[in-house]
Length: 72
Image 1: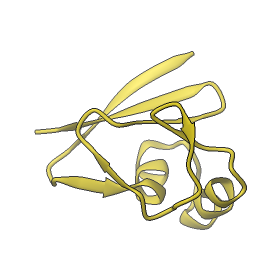
Image 2: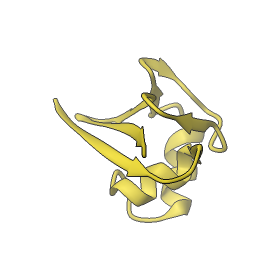
Image 3: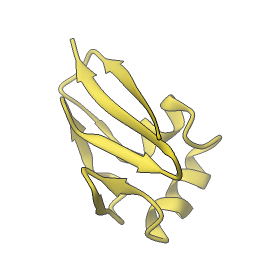
Image 4: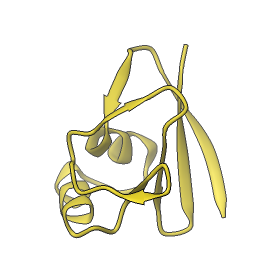
């Protein structure tokens, strides 16, 4: 599985924005569909809330890619 860190400057980033920003999907609309259909894991569990606040250390997984939020 491919894992990478995504660095943000704010306290959190919403899950759908993280997916688009990190390249897990191409558009916000695609992110919405993937999340609502239960295809995205947050910290190892299915998450269907596209506005889920992803904070430092949280991980999102779609397919074989994992992105971890890192706040600086």
